[in-house]
Length: 198
Length: 377
Image: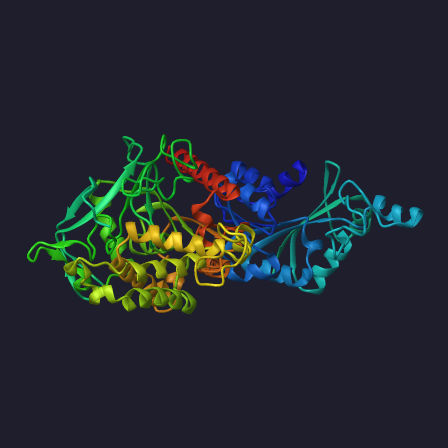
């Protein structure tokens, strides 16, 4: 978690306007508030988590990213963050488009389904992968659209979405992803972090 | 009713131009305060009351001898802690607890003003209360807070005075009174006006009071403050002090008895004309219309932080209507938080012991107070 927060924080310029979509209990918001910018909002679907955030004094709105991002004006945030929730949406493509509308830049992090530990489970055990990062069983997972780093990379190029920066994370090791090392990073990283723009 | 109680009161000498076109001056505003104003005057919270509320937010209400209407929220060690905050609440104009209203005595005739009182609006109420804030010499309030009609006043206050409050918390309210809400209010008004003792609003001249009409108005309204589930769970078909039906029109059911009781205690503390005037003010409330059908424009000039709260079982001011306020604020990039609190207690949830509401509200106010003060330093 901490590494992911650090990477995200390093992608953000100081004193900018940030929206954290699917902000959970507001840990990332707090982290960014202490390190980068005071001007940060959150959107979260769970009532309980929204109440937790508000109790901490964080500005959070209860809502669903798939229907409630529309209400924000175009380019009204410098950065919109979607941390490890893209795979849980009914229609990730629609959400990405909404994020790109609301934010001048968008930071998306994805748990990598192409990580070798994940691949091995399916290959050798023949069961749906359960890992530290993806702890759910197939029957109770909130993740509807798992993807790999390579999938997201290809998605961006097909949809003409500019990738400013793409970072691979393995445990606490950070590396850049590029065209030439894509296959390797896709195998060897548990998390991908992308800074994109429409 | 306007009994001779010792209310804190100021007389506003500045003329106030009302929306109806009339002008009033030298009129009283009754208010109450709790806690102490700090030396920087940075801890003041203005609370707006709802339709049948009054200035007695906390402690004992000297008229009813019951707890103040927001005792769960305001008081020592409560979510709005009066050890820390200076809380102000004024009786709205049109009310009957000492502020200028239809039961105010007209000095020249020695009689109550009755329905000669001008039609007032939420905007007029807020403008009148602003005079009190000026009188108290508070340059900037820490917060303006209110539920139901109190929430409407919060919205109007920020629209009228964009730099006078750091934080605004409208609860269980709307930016525009719906047809359903107007319909219920009209039902209440018709009940009062159908009472032969109403005498076109001049009942006090005849030493009469339209108690029956006012009680029916209250009973009908009271149903709208509860939820179907809440009613069913609390009363179901339980009988009142009897084992079987009596085959008559007495209050066989507990719910009937409960509503009759609510109606009867209400008439002892509330003026029928005030009920007419205040419900009318609510019906006339349409903040978007004031801003050429663009609600966002009402908040364009403000940097005030907003926190909007609704309740799942509130069908009088449903979440969808509260959300419209949030959407209007978001579309202009205003600083707004929002949560819908889970509760079976209907619209009345904001007045009752709903722990997740009280906790979220209290924590939010306290942490925001801290953040805002830190920023200033």
